[in-house]
Image (cartoon, rainbow, N blue to C red; front, side, top):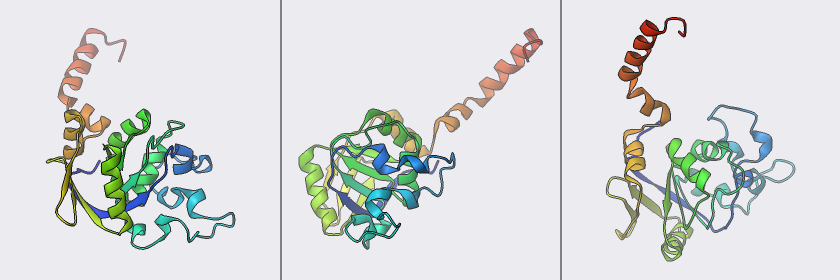
Length: 200
């Protein structure tokens, strides 16, 4: 997992509430267990018509939002089924940070496991950032200092669990966290092999 330290990029506005995981990545694209290649199907029904042509009325089909790395959106983002393909598709498109007043719990946890920073903010602050995103502004997300910095230099503080912050800063997913204890795991396995050879 890539380290998340400071992110500077275009913020895309998506002023919708209750965006569920089927809207993020429809069920017909869940046949793969690869994390790559899903970005093209992100928000598929919003981005493409029935014939597969690009819709001109959706924000992620416009410049410069095609290259956005921050998503500003509404309440209860990521609700619905617990498919991990949802954060995979967001990350593959280029999003590394999502800012909303609230998230569905499972989606919120899955974001951290995949290197995406989800940020809770109150509605007034989200509205401010949404307005800036409508003006095609960039945002700087400083995870270490826990600040969102606008082009005009104004900043908004955000809260994050210290353990999750550490994992993002150091690029540690569940596997990497486990491997940090590799020596103890090996010691245990060797001890078990010695005392219970029929198990190994």
